[in-house]
Image (cartoon, rainbow, N blue to C red):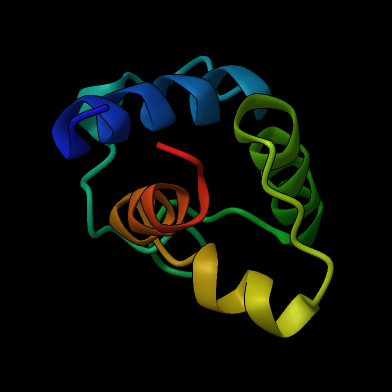
Length: 87
């Protein structure tokens, strides 16, 4: 899947999985931080994102340090998915 397409798909999935019904994919910038001052997600949301990656992409993040490196923004997650899935 092309990177741009993957990012758009991720944005839709994040909105759906985290029940962010007041947002649209265009509201989320590729490099906008998902936690803190960016999108404002919390630790519960990070667990939901880990479940999303496992369910949708077969990626299992077990190490919290790895999760912190991956769950930065949509662009970082997309790059990680592309690097860690069978093409």
